[in-house]
Length: 301
Image 1 (spheres, rainbow, N blue to C red):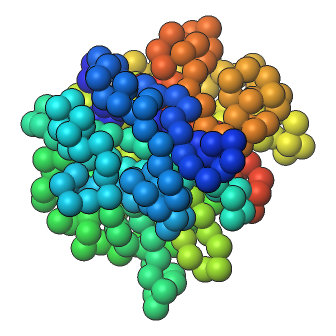
Image 2 (image 1 turned 180 degrees about the vertical axis):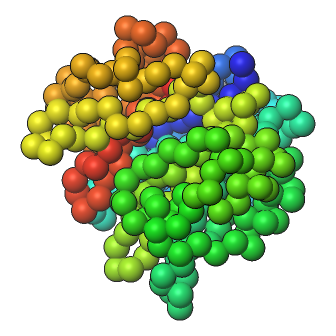
């Protein structure tokens, strides 16, 4: 099973908090690109991670040449063609930058989108950036689409302020681009809120095809009502596993296990053995709003 995302990286501030260094990554067989990344650091507003830090919202690059991307030669050699950087902030302070790198070929279908509202039209969202691989028509439709708060996947994520998963998109009345998604082979989508301050909203959507899912498994964990433990909220598995049943009796206290440590620190992590049942690498991403963790999203890649 090939996944749409080929490389996942976590960049964190150095001890002096003036540069970014690689904390962890999932590279598969791309060892040379991993080595280059391990030897690289980024200043504020330098390279893709540093740029995402400076602008304080997600940044997508679909053409490395003449862009802020600094590892172009190594990326092209590895067959990578696109990168998306997602900064994780607590207030004005950067906790980490997550970078996803994808390859563009006919065997990989999917999309990663960045949505935001316009200053003049604060009540609707539009795509401001994204990567669609070979899905040219779906990209055209998506970039023309405007979505109101509470409608469609981006609108529901905005309204709830929490990650949302939608399955069977081609048959879903809630997914506004359902017919176009079905024609493009897109079946499942995940939306994640990133920030909502001073009326400016940013969120990301990850759209998966059956043959090349964004990740083998996606999970959403939320703090319980007393904010004492993380509990399973929703998920998707390419194996059609009933995740609600699997995690019915499973919870995590702050600091407990890899996912509990993400809650404790507010810093994304990559776990090789996230749970006993999982032996594949997993990105654990905190969702933070107004300095409080609202969710942890697990990408089992």
